Image (cartoon, rainbow, N blue to C red):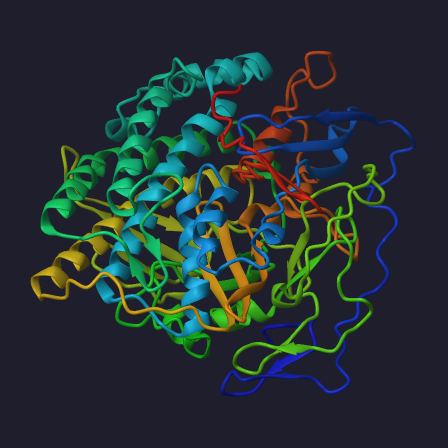
Length: 612
């Protein structure tokens, strides 16, 4: 069955009901989130801050140097985001502009998600051309975001500068190892790839800056500016899409064709090199294959913003929604993905908002909701001293069917590959595989193949993200052609009449790092509640009421210490950092402090990519 741990059952038509005598109550929270005992043979190793990530993240671990293992791990989201409090009571349209400030890297996806939530409250969808344009902007945003991660944020962890220092024998091997796909990316040895990844000076590092600029330019052409767009509206976009604008977009897509082929080839060679050097690299950042995605890139002929039809238009997305637990696909239903979501705060700096009440509210289609579901949640900050045994993070602990879930490119591609629902001129899925067609440039037409990996680990997250660059460009190309077709057919409308209506809504969208949902309630024309659950909230989460670690924590605790200097004072924790950065962490990029007197803001919108 889809949900095994929540008291929600589904009939043969997919309609949800509360099981008889079912209860959403949870066991008392565990008092201690520590790892296994090692008889005191451990030392503390803290990373504060974790650099080369967006926002403020700190990490606490305990290490057993003799066994080369991590015995304890805690992910600490350092700053309070507070958008839920800022938005409460405001005009619903404010959510589009304000929520985009939740991230200095990917503001476009927040604005889009907010617009979709408001579209659902009023039951009005954008015209087809506007949906195609929205897809096009999101695809370009992903090209930018993933290249930023692969070469400026995570890439330096695999560079000559880092590998030579922490794993000198691996560097020697890289100098002797030919790059199998050198004919595609133009680099002869693995050492040449590592040199290219050197921060600031490396050729691949510097080249990626140009690629990210092209992605940002496409987004800016459609959304007005970036990262905080000015043209996103409920039921449309405030831009006139015409042949001249799309020609500017096309020129940038065409220029990236060969680059995305090279990106995939570079990371294929790098991943296979590490696996061949030592099988233990498969353990770095490894965790259970628990994956969650809402999918994205809507079919303009299917999306109607209606929660009752979400399963139908969700299945038509160019990236399929769904949940995978322990490697098995549980569902591709967007409604079932939503019903399984809960947030817990037992180890977070927030108060429980349930007040001991476990009476389920209902979703717009009448389905029962947990009191811990975002539509029922209230954000009640509870700042206090940090304790690794009690409360230690400003991140909540989202769970799906009470399981810690990972999201991002690996989840998107895994679900899409297994579900087999995507079949376009550029992307085909099925039997656990994806085929992505990238047209010819200077390099010939290429079909990039990706298969569900044997393990969800740091290297596979990076490999999946490299493939997602190609996937995103292919989707941008497909959306561009679709937009041109609508223009030729005279369907030029970019917005539909829209008025704010009372009701509940949710935006189901994705950021580069994974699943993004905005749940809202509108009453008397004002936001009665607004809840944002970001990808990094899912993955940076602390322990839950059952003491299960969040994805970052689980991945780090499964990571062996392979660094050749791990017993010395020169220890850098590179394996731990590779595990953490493989998720592309993005914590709040702006600091907001709420008091009874109002809201104070200190702008800190930076992706921290200039830090080493």
